[in-house]
Length: 255
Image (tube, rainbow, N blue to C red; front, side, top):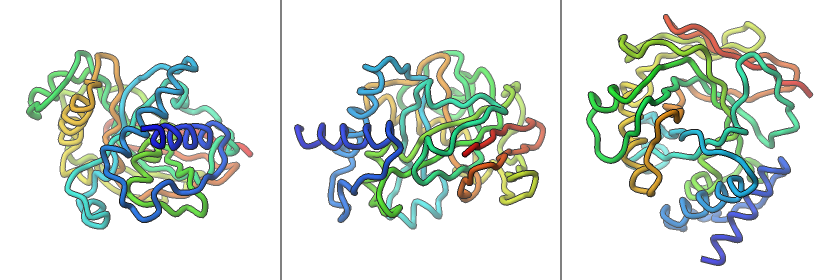
């Protein structure tokens, strides 16, 4: 366990200082359970510094990505309040190492949700849905990493932006969306790219977080996963997503 704690410290310090670090498992041999233990310990260091847990993010929610990575399940990471960027706000580029951004759907829960739940049970726990953007950032040198590296590095999660909340009692299974940089479309997609239906991602979040002893709580945000490939972030840009019926979310990046 001591080595896992060393890895957690390494990754926490890399994220805190926005500096690249060496891979912890370049050959990808670390059991995913150990990688998640590193992630949990790394986030616990943040909590001990005063950060609050506010939800979870889901990753590899594309079937094609799962096949590419050779896995049969999604991955997940933990969100803290300091990771949230207010909609329309400006974030310093210096906060990141290799930042990219992807459009997502976000859920906020009105009651706890834990274990093996159905889609109907998951939806009943949702207070609202919103268009969102996740800033993902690998802390590894040269942007090289194995699957356990990614999991240990909080599933590459670094920040998130959530737009206005909307009533979840509408069909959000296949909402068209456009992600733009400075008003120029760079990705076009649909919420259907998130496991075929974003609710499946929420169901997975309930299962995985409960298995880790951290069931989803009322008030928590769940980022459902990327609906398109990610785009690199550059200083001086404005990144936004426009989602059918739900509206927009965006943020500025300053040098």
